[in-house]
Length: 156
Image (cartoon, rainbow, N blue to C red; front, side):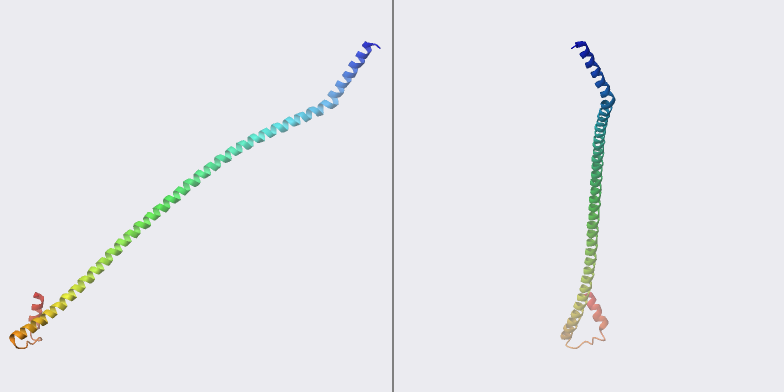
C-alpha cells in the first residue's frame, strides 16, 4: 500500500466531506443558529420592554396613589370645614334661641310683675278704703272717689 495514494484518497474524501458539509449541512445549521440568536435577542428585548413597562406601571401606580391621597386629604379637609361650619351655625342658632327665650322670659316676667303690681295696688286700695272706712267709721263710696283711689294706688 502506498502511503501517498492513501493520503491523497483521504485528502479527497476529506475535501468532499467539507464540500458536502458546506453545501448541505452548514446552511441549515447556520440558519438554525441565527434563528436561535434572533429568538434570544427578541426574548431579551421583550424582557427589557417588560421591565420598562413594569417601571412605567409602578410610576403610574405611585402617581395614582399620590393623587388618591391628595384627594382623600381634600375630602377630609372639606368635611372638617363643613363640620366647623355646622358647629358654628349650631352655636349661633343656640345663642340666638337662648337670647330669644331670655327676652321672652324677661317680657313674661315684666308682664307678671306689672300684673302683680296692679293686683297689689288694687289690694292696697281696698285695704286703704277699708282702713279709712274703719277710721272714719263710715263707708266711702268707691264709685264717687275712684279718681282719688286711683291716684292713691299709683302713689303706692
